[in-house]
Length: 203
Image (cartoon, rainbow, N blue to C red; front, side, top):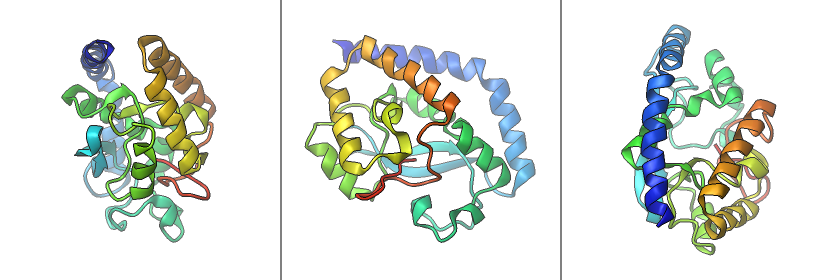
């Protein structure tokens, strides 16, 4: 029953968000266009509920000649690929704002496990152990407020499993509030990355 309510909440809040945040969207679009050539939005193939694929939306933070489908932490000298505005967007997590569109379309939820890259098989397989691939992926989630980019894959998947076990309105509220404080403190942010078995990093 809550999953239906959760979807209604997602539609309502994402619609409000798109309207209220439209001035910020406009400012960021202008800043990105002035900073570097290329499209404003960055699309990337990600894994959604039941391991379906969709294109996640972000404000572009990297040069258009950056190697495709390569986690930032696997690039040689990642900073050379990140634009000036991109560094600010990543630090403040504002690059994630276009995912409100993914939420409105039903491809994501506000709260849920962060969608893995399509080729991030280790994380996908680890999540299978906890049923974390069978709930809507989210803009933020329980793992993000308990380590964010710093988490090893095994721990991240386990936390995603805890979210599956505890999923409810109140737990979603807890994750949402926790995310606000994490972003304000820039906790656990490691540039780029999608997780690894040694030192996990998740975009």
